[in-house]
Amino acid sequence: MAFDTFARDLQIATAALGPDEINKQLAAFARSELAQVVASGEGTDNYDRFVNGREGAPEESVQAPGPILYVFNWWQDIIVAAIAELKKRAPRQSGRYAESFLVIANGAVVTDYVSIPGNAEVIITNFQPYVRKVEAGKKRGKRVFEGAKLGLSRRFGNSYRVESTYLNIAAGVHPMIPYILKGEYTRLRAARIANPARFAGRSFPKRKDLEAGQPITYPALIINAL
Image (cartoon, rainbow, N blue to C red; front, side, top):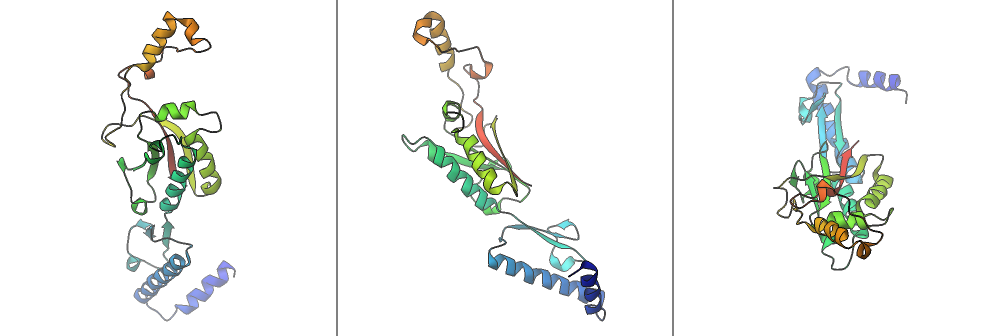
């Protein structure tokens, strides 16, 4: 149906109604359609509502012709998928690494993904102190976070932007974060200088971010709704 035809039919259908009644019926219609979409699985109970452009306003406050807009949040789906992708690529010696991924939204760890606001930025990382070593040690194309990013982008790229990067994470997010380097890299560099033959083909250039006392940076996925 052409928009001008729809608009004319709508005008005829509401011609005998006063403004308050039109607003009331518009709100009821929006609620009914929302319930149907959620029941069908095309929508979710986790959504942001905009009424005449006002976020969170109740449907009853609508002023015709509206609009009443529902923006569905699929954080539960993409986060569960992201953790599955990460675990699939995680080392399996003890299983500890695979069970140490955490989800951060608004600066705090969250476990109830349904409650995450649609406009939030979600970060997924791992709190094990060797997380950076695992990521850097993986062969190109098989890195844990980078590989997960590619898999998620293929599945959710129309709705979410997924990035893979390294982050500085402040204290207070998790008891094991940030991990402070103890000086292993410095000792290896000194040992190579003392005995180059022992470290043939390996180099340890001086890097401030690997010096003792420095917090590590954490490989992470950053996810935003488009």
